[in-house]
Length: 84
Image (cartoon, rainbow, N blue to C red; front, side, top):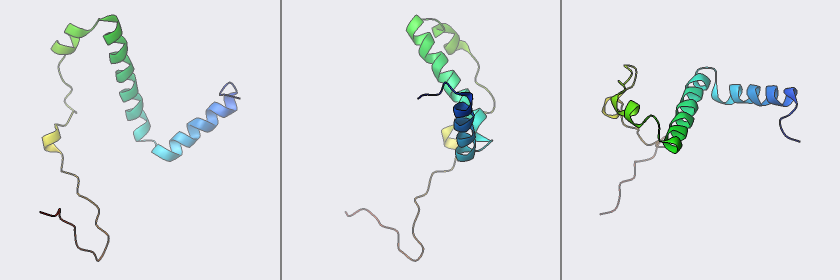
């Protein structure tokens, strides 16, 4: 039981690769790592000044620069509007 067998770990990694794809896995790893680092820093109280003075990476896109999500409408149906 559990993930102590290397074959089980390989199976889980293959399943993650199939579900999320090769492009998303590194991005998810970085996100998870930065989240864990932020959680650890908040517990120890370190990194508060560093987080405020750290420059933002250039590849970060502001929320205003991304297109708004549009709801999916089934083919042949009219979009619903809220009742007034």
